[in-house]
Length: 407
Image 1 (cartoon, rainbow, N blue to C red):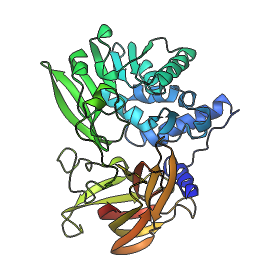
Image 2: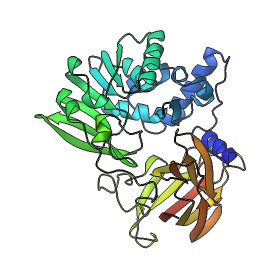
Image 3: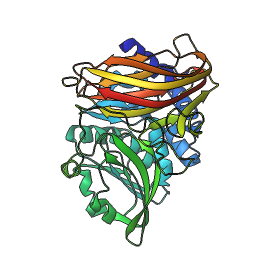
């Protein structure tokens, strides 16, 4: 079902955008980048004018492999080799905004990857120090940054868990890979009063936090659910909770758990939410007190929530899926292919998408209905992402009681 995956990525990640191809003019690429910023960064709530300007100026396509450049201005993660990805533009902008980088800030980045995040930081900070543990990626990123004349960005190959002690202390630290806990060397290298943005948690259950160093200790502010590649090296050796790909399950399918414990907070374990809200109403919820509701009036616009899980296709051949759904005037989006589906996208050991399994489409107006279906798991699958929402359609969709059980 790769054709469905291609359609989903193109219409639900950045509606209306044309894909950049080889030979495009600079004006055309800039127009696409500005459209990306307008529709997927500003419209999603990023407000800092310096961050917005940096996102407009930083040429994301230069940090994307040639084979992936047609997707460079879509709000999605893209493979860059060595089982790593370049983060979606919104995630880069959001994390940068939360970091509150000042013109005189000295910033440490853990996980150079493609170099894109470092370039954005370079447009905002005095000096940026970026560490990458994968030698091939680090060297390529360094060449790209040098070619694009980011003279205030310094890179090195090494284990990000250890930080960059020779250049410490840092005013800001940003981590673009996920350890189980905050590495102590990074705490030590953060200046008093400094800020750190980092995703921490289990491999498939991560939350993004903003930490501020006060009296030598970190004060924590939860931001939202997220999903990053794991921090390797010492961080992975210290990880206590390992994923079980032989027992794929979905967390918080009833949307009862909130990240910060407040009603306005996002649901725990879900990430990249767009036009979604958790509703507390025990007369409507099919399980517990809460359910999730998606509303969209703009055909083709992103309206979704995602969750990742491990699944080994050599051990698990089927997934039993069930959920409750309710619809109100759901109509297709920009074309007749844009309907809400329950989608599971499977990835191989290189983190390349290999297949989709779907339930749906869901359309029209209907009361709470239970859906049950068994979906196949590709033999090469090692990871999966669950996608829910209107996915380009318009109207209102409510979901509750989502469960997944491997067989």
